[in-house]
Image (cartoon, rainbow, N blue to C red):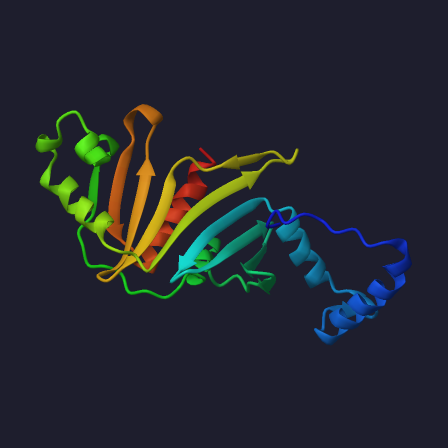
Length: 219
């Protein structure tokens, strides 16, 4: 699920590995009368073949990890990969998948700033055709982008069809954790008319934007 490949055990070790895996699953309470429990099987299936996949690639003060929220039917499962370790949790349905993803981001207070939306062309800075004519708002965003960030992340949403084909939501949603707080950056619109929107990185705001990416895939 994190594109790390598959390891095939030699036949000579198959019995030993099966006993070890059953022992570990039993210790974790994931066996039901000697077989894998239905809940665990559903969770693995939701991660391996999700109908909807929410992914955040996170850099938190130099620590890199990936959050994946897989949805299949009513089953919602979160997997957090940090190095060689993966933490898996079956969600109870009280939160929407978009909110679950955001809840697994590093804690950071939101920056207090107004919503800014500008044509992407204005963010070319000194490379633009008329750098002196760039708006005050564009220059204020330049200052935000120029601040050192101690954390950042990129969020993507995709769906898989019955044939296994994957469609990724158009648009880019990222955030930066600055001294002033978390700031969200979103790029939307057709290739010829892209807009960049800068907003406070409040959890509810991010969750709404993630949910909007998912909704756009149904359009």
